[in-house]
Amino acid sequence: MSAKTEFSLQFLINPTLAIKTGSSALVKSSNAFQVLVANTVVNVAASDMPALTGTIPTAYTSTYAFQVDSAGALTVVKGNNVLTATGLSLSDLPATDRNKVTIGLVTVVNATGSTFTGGTTALDTASLTVYYSNVNVSGL
Image (cartoon, rainbow, N blue to C red):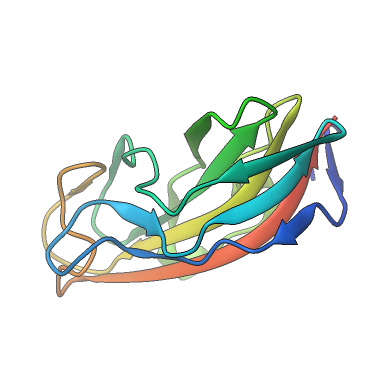
């Protein structure tokens, strides 16, 4: 676990992350949500999340973190590509940036086929398994 990450209860109203629509490369928040960032209550409308970035080779897994700052700006950070057979550890997850709160994680498992390209490859592609998680991590 990163030294700059602390776990705390920050959500006042939870987001719900999901694929935007069938055959989409985008993630959305299905709900408007409210989160506490640096002692500021931030209201974020249901919307598309920033596009995923980078690539994940066949037989690898990576996790993306969606973060929000006290101005309500959303960002995405990609974790390490890890050989799927070895599994993810905490050190493979993206660290929460300073003065931001991680609101959700998307883990992409690229089983077979071609390289996953963030922002381009559809999240419901048959060779992918994608996990959506609401989380609650603040950066110091």
